[in-house]
View 1 (tube, rainbow, N blue to C red):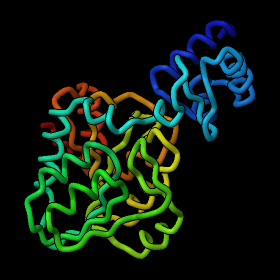
View 2 (cartoon, rainbow, N blue to C red; view 1 turned 135 degrees about the vertical axis):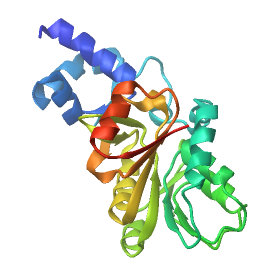
View 3 (tube, rainbow, N blue to C red; view 1 turned 60 degrees about the vertical axis):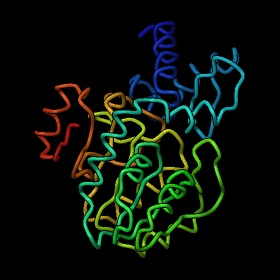
Length: 257
């Protein structure tokens, strides 16, 4: 691939994904990481891109880097009705006695909003927006991961949650990938989500992925899981047919709402 053609493709990838790791870019472009770094140098010099924690992010204008990567307020406006339907369907999978991990993100918040009051379940959450809604539901028990607060996502980040999560066994984990790809699996927008999501998967009997249809065929900066980790997918009616076939072939239970 000619250098100019590769640079254009690189720029388009950054715009489309809103952040990709160097290693992932090398794999997608089928070049070495050194070549990717060399190509990125021109974008860095012109101010069209920045590097955040090893992640290349397209920068069309001077705004907060963290806000470019993720903004929960912006995400709340995206596919709002679809998220509500997905969240409502997810609550139908809850049963008395469940111990659940509630992942970060606005789709999981819709799950909590759809829950009945006074449910006899235990839930562990990691973001302030989820906790705020969850405490109104008067469930049996809430466990909150604490640490450094990220205002753009309302997530609390700390290595202190690792022994807590490793000591807890959940019946279900409701995870919310920022993007999913058939080959590259499940990815998230910000690196500090990775540990939470990996531990949710590791310590749960069943993993339920809540995915709006605009996330299919996309890649974000940080991979946290593969399709072998997923038992159930709940999505909206915009899911492409090839993805329906993909889940059927992999024997992943699919709910379309």
